Length: 204
Image (cartoon, rainbow, N blue to C red; front, side, top):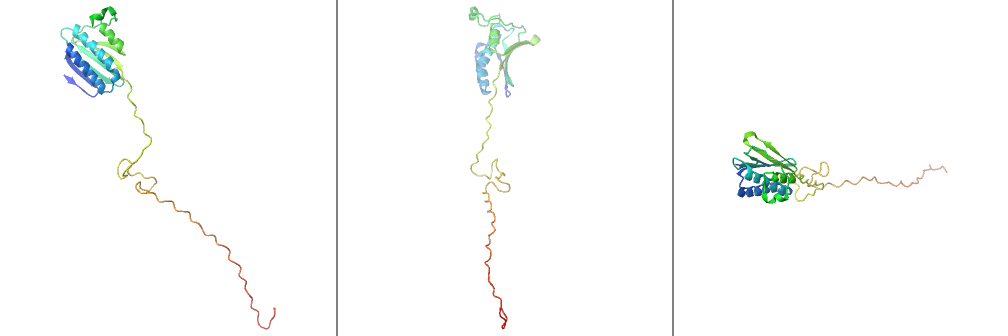
């Protein structure tokens, strides 16, 4: 059974070596799709150790479910099996390197070394869930654009209805401002000499 909501993925499988390799590739593909490339190496190593632990030690069968979930800034990877026994993490011993995942919990020590946190959640007689978390990198912040350029027709698009000045359509140039009225300056009229009539017979 496989389900795949937006940031959640789960797959049920038999923890056999051939299937473990498939799950490694599936987890890598999903994290790449979620733009979580920096987490791929640690997530794949952790899920490999948990599945190998199920393959080596789980009883009565090797059926398990792998889940990966991205919630906010945290990626959680978990493996649920049907063995109710709770494992304990041991220490990494170089002399035990050839033993793979020993009963001392060497695989869980690796999980603890590559993850931010890990734990075991008992499920009663139905088994247990072993999980670990990784801190997800912050998403890229889009660059805010503050300058805009408009090309082509202005009869459509986001700038439709906007004008450079109130009442002037964007597609029509603004009328130039009228020149200020200048009143003509009139020169004073020249003085005109007038002659006075003198009645006949009177002098001066």
